[in-house]
Amino acid sequence: MKVFVACGNGMGTSMLIKIKAQQAFKKVGLDASFDHGTVGEATSSAGGYDIVFCPMNFVSHFKSFEGSSVKIIGLKNPLDQNEMIEKLRENGFIE
Amino acid sequence: MIKAVVGYLIMSIGSGGFTSTFRPIVNALASKFNITASLIDTYTQQAQQMNPEDGFFVTNPDAMMYIMASFVISIVVNFILVALNKYTKIRTLYTTGHVLQSYSQIWIWFIALLNPAWYGWPYAIAIGIFAGVWASCGSNFTVEATQNLTGGANFAVGHQEMTGILLTDKLAPKLGKEEDSFENLELPGWLSMFTDNVVSTSVLMFIFMGIVLAIIGKETMMTFDTGLSAATWYVMYIFKTCVNFAVYMVVLLTGVRMMVGELSNAFHGFSDKLLKGAMPAVDCAVTYSFVSGSVPVLGFVMGLAGELIGIAGLLLFKAPILLLPAFIPLFFDNATLACFANKRGGRKAAVIIPLINGLFQVVASELMLLFFEKGVGFHLNAWGAFFDNNTVLPALVLGSKFLTPIVWSLIFSAILLVLTQLYYKKNKEHYWDHTNE
Image (cartoon, rainbow over all chains, first blue to last red; front, side, top):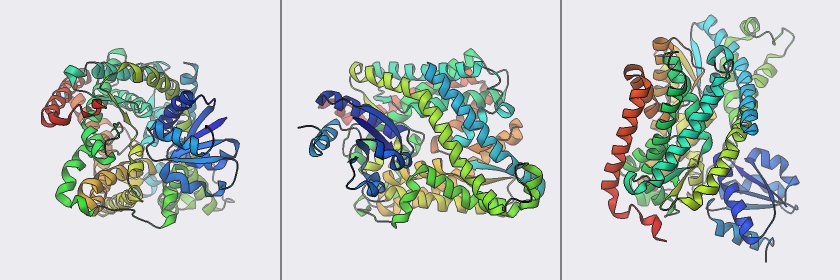
């Protein structure tokens, strides 16, 4: 599975979510490779990924991906692993 | 290690691009209007350090070693201070690697600009220690304000406006009422494009740099930029030149990400397990998720208004350095302060504080650029006008000039550690609440 983590400047927040997500994925036994970068990069390359994580306020930038195979997952608290796991479950990545 | 070196060299390519784009404009302005220009921007500033003509660092391979060493020392110092938190009262692990890296890079450069003899291992180590102490104490000061904003999400802000957050937390309640804060503020949808750094940089540059280029005129630009010929359509030239700033920012960011990435990853891995009583200090943008609606964008808009008022003032008083707004400090500084202001002082504070801060960004940038221009004899292409860079960094630079950098960074570190003890005394009651879960 391929995951892209996006934030405004592609530096701090996305890096942090990436690290938290890696830990969360490990916890639930999912195997994935991660990249991180800006929302701008994500909107142009999200098609090549299975999941895009971003802070909630950026979800609206991804309207064009509605109904496509890539799942856009907005996070309320970028540091909360439980929220990530909960949302992976909602989207059917884990049971 | 390989990735760090490659990242550094990628940064130097972005650096060359920044400078070759900006230099002809500065030269043209100087010749036509007898005025110099600088940007209010962090990455343009960081880029200049790596340019051989300006920074003398790229031609000297030691530079990368000093910067990396100083960066690693700052991380280690932070780690030690947190590990000893029983005595130091430092609760925050500074996880924003790219900011720490830029501290090392910019500060080593500035100190060496003050006096070329102030360059080498002792200075790299002293700056690394101070950067570590500053990052630890500064982020620790944001814990209470951030916990209040996020409803106890157990993190602090580790970025370049930590003093600004502390000050906003104190000032905002005097400006307005907490109950009066924005809920679900809806700004026009097109404004949200400014949250994308590439679009935002391009648009801001096209507007402001575009005006400057239009005023300079094609004739004059042709004598300073050999890439512009009589046959080129000037509007397209302006567009390309302005968009170039976004291009080189992306290159520079890619370099920084590569340089910092591995180290941050490794650091997170073991620090989570090892440190008890610690919470992470994270990038300022994480707080935006805890604010409903477009408050960050409001901060950006008000900050821009403040900067424009300031720039109008510079023109009115015929200031020797013209300033132009760029994206990074304008957005992230003011957006962050707006979030904290909104929480503590409501609408009024959320509008007033970024407005004043925008103005302050211009004033502080102009003063520090003038200091370097007149006092040091060096033209800086930009000032990275985050709140800490407008307050703590000038204190570091000016103090170093008079007391020498090593003595001053040790005194300054001691002052910060004492202030942390006082801060602890004041907030004793709930100081360790985050460990109670």
